[in-house]
Image 1: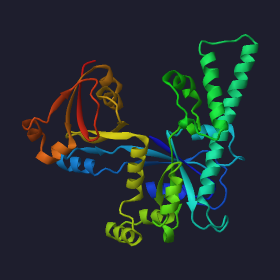
Image 2: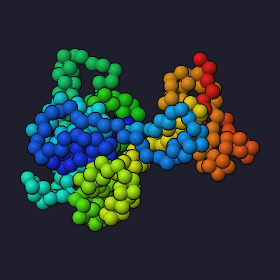
Image 3: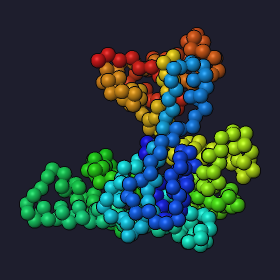
Image 4: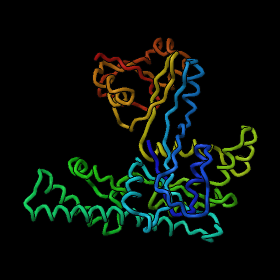
Length: 351
């Protein structure tokens, strides 16, 4: 999963990335013109894999990960095709919104900034749609048609009208055939988007009305970005916990963000266990045992026979795999089995 951090200049995107990933990317008050993002890999915080690792004592423990892409400030001036193409690498977008006083920009105005970026994303998609509709019209004049050209023109016209009402594509009902037609465009307003409210330390946790207003449009999570970046650089866990208690932070920035992202984006985790490796895997909620097998390796999906399955909760309740089997909690599941969060799977296959 790739989450792109977007926002206006000096909103604290790089500060948030440093807090999440314990990186040391340069934080600067000046505009950055480099279109290539800072990149960091963040382990998905999950105490279940820690307990599984303690139980199985594997040679290797592998967490699920999220790739964080930290882009330069979004504006009409830098929203050229190259910049937009870099943002399209993201599976989801996290809009970092400034909620702290800035020496260059002054007092924050989070609601305005949310509207500004929403408008920029809509404008970006509008330009793509209009350019493609112009090309379709030119091809029609030349007598050039494809099997999908009529459907493509129809859905793009619907999208254009929708964007013209200042609405994101994610709000537009689109059927499977239409999705197939437009997937290649990677429209920005079709991607999942949530807000990271980047608050200064003194007002963190005191923005209920503001958050409620933002939530009428987007899901939102609050960070004290600068404070949590400094916190991530401390080495003593006890010291970290004391500082977190002082400001009212119960869970680390990394764990809060990864859990929030999983919930908002509809992801779930399953596990594979053994003496060689204990590993967490990520799939979408509602996906099947075959999808889980594909996440591990395409050969497992191609030669899928059965999935040996039991739940993490049952394992923790009875204490061992042997007891899971003894209590009738060990199952064989077929291709259509819907994987539940916390399932422990072993795929039987033959290629």
